[in-house]
Length: 437
Image 1: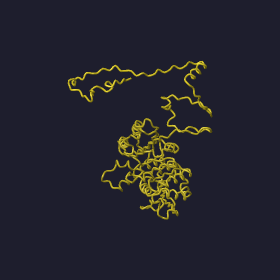
Image 2: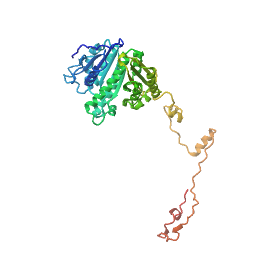
Image 3: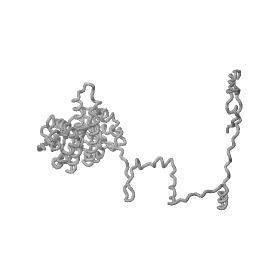
Image 4: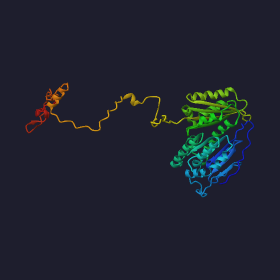
């Protein structure tokens, strides 16, 4: 295992006194760290975590943690998340010590492979045990990457959601809406990296810039907790006198929000606005009115900050979350186990339509056989008990239906079909005198 001391970048002038550490896990996470080192993440401590050296190296000024074990033998995880998880567990104390002192830990990675899928849940647990608010920004594979990586990514997402305070997920397949037929494979992955970095940057600005309307860490944690991949995000930016209108148009047309449909289905929405000193009340009001109109059923949390270096610009970041449909669990008692029901508000449909039968009486342990009685003995027994003898059920008698031979109509003048002296044109039951009941 190889570690380098982290070197944080200088913070901006209006930054909060907040220690934020960003961990890039696996090759995809290292690529995201490279992109972050080129943008405005000043003041953050960057740490690259992998089981082998990344093909494109570690960003300048970032620490590096190589989780080398005897199990890996210098060959990496081989795409197996269990190998990555075991390597992280063996170096759990090192990960926890690296997270120490941070108020917020951001984890960026791509799920589906061995390193990112296996290490991220263990790293999130180490960060939370160190006392940091832990948020993860992850991508899911393209459909073309195969169902094996898709299944591993979904399982890793479940484990990461259980370990982190919040998970914001970007399915790569949604990015296909931004690509054309001439887009290369490298450009496609660069696009997903750029979108994920934009989402992380929006949360970074929200946490580090001193805001006129601030969102506390506890509020952000409560908003993202237990969503488990049900969080979507979009980050847009515009400049000029029409910055509010242009930002709003970009936001509602953003492919990750499905044309605004995601906002309508969300149950909680976080909106972060960052502008220069000339940010007006009308700009903020225009954006928030449109967002509130789109998500009328959601709880909306808004934060706004002003940055001297952000003159004539407006950046809007939206995180929309939606709870999964989890069953309601009844309280557990000492004598009765817990039961799971789909809803506790309305009675069951079966109870509304059907009447419940009373429970049957308990039968005796020994039932003697019934005595054999003749009909006369049965009637006498009923008379002795004060009852009334049953009436004999009427016997069915065979009768004749009042059927008449119908005229043959247009076939009346045709020759009858006679066989062995019988007219076959006459129905059989009439020829043979069969009575119908």
